[in-house]
Image (cartoon, rainbow over all chains, first blue to last red):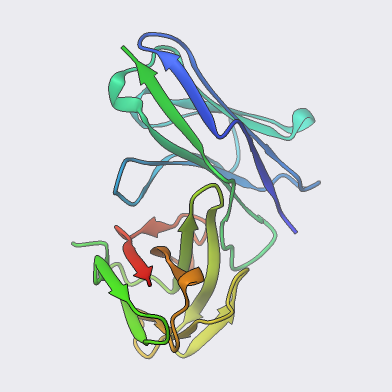
Length: 115
Length: 113
């Protein structure tokens, strides 16, 4: 079964600093990979996804993520943190070999941005 | 185009009471899902449906039942609520063509006392 590991349940960065949120998956066949963001008291919003093609994918709000097959990773980055980036971030995977693909989520990383 | 909507937004139940959460989508999606979100646990799949009249169990199905009588609606039922079911419940939907891309509703916050 698929599993997703997000290193660090809470990450704190200064405004303007680099944001790095880590995600590793377990399957031998690379799955579809996603990052979702959840702002307080809201639902989940898709930030970006990797399905095929270029391994560096760009998402909304200046975020990007790079798929590294050799490291089974899909880390999320943003060059310069903004106060509005404070939220919870979830990495998720979906089996690309399955016709029906429920998402498997990591446990989430809460990002705090300090002024 | 409202996307995915959930009713109600908040609910408080006493142990043993029953209730139904309603999820509706207007995107003509074939697949629908119910997740629960608990602190430090991420989102876990409760049940899902690949089409009208068809449902399947997810990771944490115990204590819940679901029904998909209409393509646009997916109901989650709690027959006898327990405090362990205190959670935030999210519904999602996706199309059969791009099944991995799920659209989420705003959530229902349920407290069982």
